[in-house]
Image 1 (cartoon, rainbow, N blue to C red):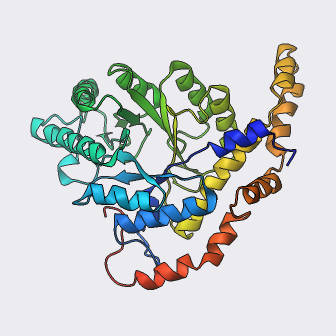
Image 2: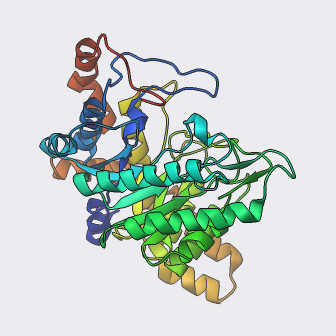
Length: 388
């Protein structure tokens, strides 16, 4: 246990990673959605599965909802259901990318009727937040164009500002708007919010409770994501993470699967910038489990974040600062890599045991019988997936 100091363990114990409800539904490639046995049929069952992740990890105390996918008649009942299972309802995610009206835009659309519809959807999401106790409204927009000359890009930015301004004005005093960005797909010539700078420009014009959401899969290849993390923390505008992993584009794979060193580097900047266990910087997963089992996929994901956080906390900052101050390039890099290469898994397993948690959460879930039970109990009905 000496590998992880009491200060490191205290930081790890406070860590919380929000789970996305949609990760427990069926998803697939861009061409096919694949069903799997035991998939939830409604949001109540999604929350039950998320609570199972938290039970074996103590890392995932809240669940993000997606509207209209997770719409219910009684949000008070949904909130009680979550609390009975030991979790809370978290971020509310809007959806303006699956309605026929939004083919050429939503919050940026030139048609006032369609733009009004999109704004009203977000106002309805805030009404839901009032019922669920959620703090954050997260907005991702699948808006842009495919061809030069197709649309007026500047006018769309103006309309986006006007739309966001109305939505922001409806927020309660303790609520926030976080604007996600994505450099392409489904728009290929231009995207209305393609990068952190555009998101920052839009939210900075709104106010202090409008911030940027950084999805770790939403960048061009070779992008230095940790630089963006540093800059947004420096500016006080990093509101949340969507953690996932990618090889080529927005693959939505298990975080840390493609490039664990990148995840480490990101977390180093989070810690350095005061973002770890900072209530103003929310950690959330945004992943789809296409070929792997969903609940174990989420367990593996939160454990990957925890492990890389532990490694990042092991950096010898005095030695690093001394090497940097002396322009000792190789010495500084060695200090950095020593922390990355440290195997913290045995120490984390011992620490979990001391807290009454499974030393191996993946094995504990496999032995629990939960998967077999939901496969039996959830036979029949319509499984949740993209759009439901």
